[in-house]
Amino acid sequence: MKILSFDVGGSKIAWALINENGNILNDVTVIQTPKTSEEIENIFVKVVQKNIFDGFSVATAGVVLHNKLVGKPNNLPSGYESIDFKNIAKVPYVIENDANSAMWAEYKIGSLKNVNHGVMLTLGTDVGCGIICNGQILRGKCGAAGEVVFDCSGRSLQRIALEAGSTEQDCFAIYNMALKQNGAERKAYKIWQEKLLDCIQKINQVLDTEVVVLSGSLAKIVDYTVVNASIKLLQPYNAPEVKSALCGSNAGLIGSALICAQNLKG
Image (cartoon, rainbow, N blue to C red; front, side, top):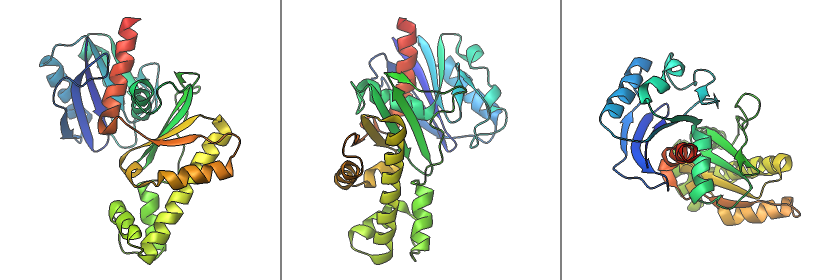
């Protein structure tokens, strides 16, 4: 079984063929996201015409419910929400929120495997959130479950660093300078990680979850030993385990493809 899978975000679009086990079958193509919805739709059409596949999946920014975008994502052009994916694909298809897609990949083959209650936070410029509850994606009444403004994003770290007196705005540079005991950067990193810990604590107070998985570029700078030790002190009776994601930057592609493959199998 082959699924033609796309991952659409505000800065890039990626696609590849993926099988029912989550294996990527060819090179992942990545391009910059075009400025208009017409250009984006043309990319879908051209890629579909060049490939043979059994199913079609899209992991996308924005709120998704019942295989459809509820509205225009903030980081994509007007008209994107009206693209007729059903007509483009002409095969069974899945449209899924990108955070939920990435989480599903972790649930099936990554750090959330065999976990019934889990959360994945994608730490990047902003923060995405996907929730597994009783082995199912928790969507809420209109698909917006998990659409929280978390204060532990890349933007947050940049703001905190500025407030601490640093002139550095690259998050990885801030982290590397913190490791070297630089005063302002070390202070900023410590505050940022405390905000991440606060987010995890509040998520667990609401959901009482088993595992919180961290993905995205900033997941690489988290001190998991410190975070896990701290959450156990704060919530000794029901602390979740905090883990790094395993599926990497292609998690959205893989997750949406796995959902599509599961639907095809019935």
